[in-house]
Image (cartoon, rainbow, N blue to C red):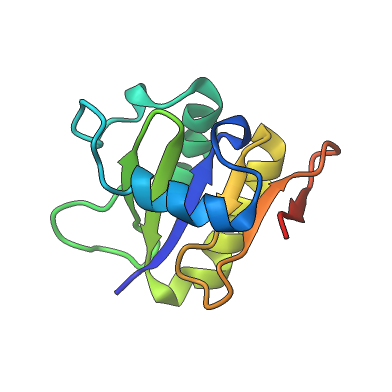
Length: 129
């Protein structure tokens, strides 16, 4: 089990909660024509965010060496990141700060509430609801 977060381009995602969940399901069917292992396929803002996020939560190797390692899957308009549950709050705090900085959306895919955050236009985040 992991704690999963999705960073995404807000303009690529539906702006209504119900439609967003369907879009998330479509994105995680992994049907884009690439292997999802390289950030090079992602939009520039996502790559910039990943560079900062992975400095704190490096890409998980073949064997976990630290609870700070994370698994990443890269799409053109989103990045799905899987963190250790032990680092849930640290991962969420950092991802939310970086999403605001890079004007990205953030979906708490593993949250019981499934919070969807979008940029507030002032460097912060607001709930989509």
